[in-house]
Image 1 (cartoon, one colour):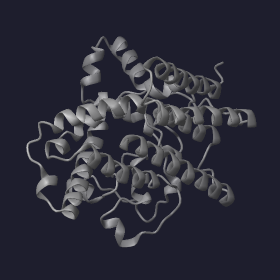
Image 2 (tube, rainbow, N blue to C red; image 1 turned 120 degrees about the vertical axis):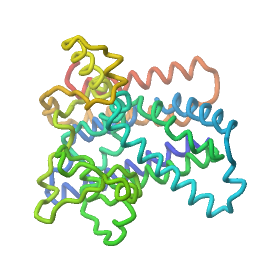
Image 3 (spheres, one colour; image 1 turned 30 degrees about the vertical axis):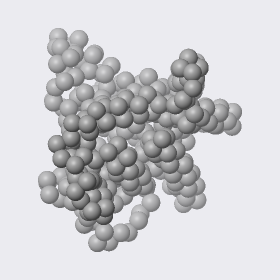
Image 4 (cartoon, one colour; image 1 turned 90 degrees about the vertical axis):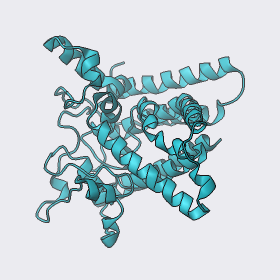
Length: 339
């Protein structure tokens, strides 16, 4: 199935480039990676592989349903190359507004804040994604099936955007020159992860032209190095607990709603600035070979569930799915030292 190939591709690419950057950072003596933070990000990503079994089916069903009620059929009227250009530009533009809304609307910010809540920025930040975000955010791409683009077109565009954007999380300085006028560069995307409001912007996934057109493009002044920037949301969640990583924003909103006598549902659906509480980093102990080996087993089980549980008897698939989620959650608790 196309979605299985998509997640397999993302897994191989992500692990390869993260390992390469980690090694390069060590050789350069740079502290771009905190091993426990990187492992927490990868553990969160492993859980996403398991959640993808559910979300992929739901998204394919919903997307196909909308496609059946398409308004036009551009793939049938446009020649091949032109069709792919229109599909890519459409997906990119929708991603840009999806992304901006995810920083403004609390229900989507709950899903997206996880990606921004670390004190570190590196390639492992790319797959640091809330387990529930994709299940919510895909609906904002509804114009694509309405224009006649199939689920295969959608997955192909998403694959290009996501692989490219993953690479833009690197801390390596990659001079791209004039390419930066059209495409997102690592330097541009780094500003999207700073907590400094003077420099925050750059919402595009692979194209920076939307930021230039809609006034959200930011560039670091020549007298400031990105090594001086502070990453995250100002009150970061440097934790291994998957409960905290996935739900801390909802917990904060609930606490604020009770304290101020406001409606939790109203705050969740509101467009006011997101609320966070200050918390101290809680992952200070060094990793051990046993912890790394344990994560290897957990990660392999999640990959297997992602690739192998789309067919066959329902009960064994559900048991494997629940077991894998329990395994990554338990490993997150181990990383948090709460067991």
